[in-house]
Length: 216
View 1 (cartoon, one colour):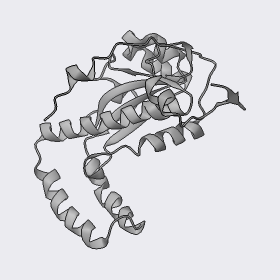
View 2: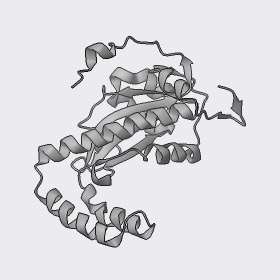
View 3: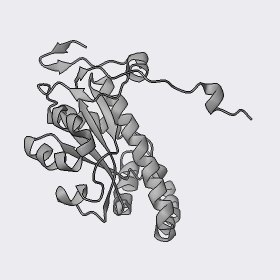
View 4: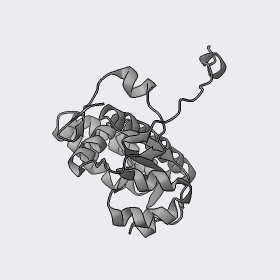
């Protein structure tokens, strides 16, 4: 994509966003993403759906040289992506995201998205559910929701003209503490490198729909 004033053109072309997305391993280290644009990308990604709209995802954007130095020994299988990309976004879920329920539902009423009586009815159902749900079920729900936002983040990045790569090869037990986060509260989901490809990602084979789909 061409650039204007150092920024890549956005696109709304569905084929370019979805069908031409590749997992990129090597990035142009000279390409930087401003924190203003990264904020836009994260805000657009956060339009992803989540169970009861609880939005459990949390982002750690590692875009400084110091941050990448901290990350490098934790991502030994993904050194090239970590060091050459514009940033690495660590996606976590917040195990205590119930703390935001009143803000989420209250703002929905304030903005006219939800009637007051509907909010009150839902809160009466949701709060006891969260108080009693099994930890394993809550973890599953939060991982699903965080997976949704991660995929949307990669598509939004593509729409902004950037490339990405989702990564699971890192020290999950250490990453929160290394960056000053409560490791019991913030649970790692994946790393996503983002930047402009210096080497295009390879296309990959997809199983046909006939193999992956059952009709009923």
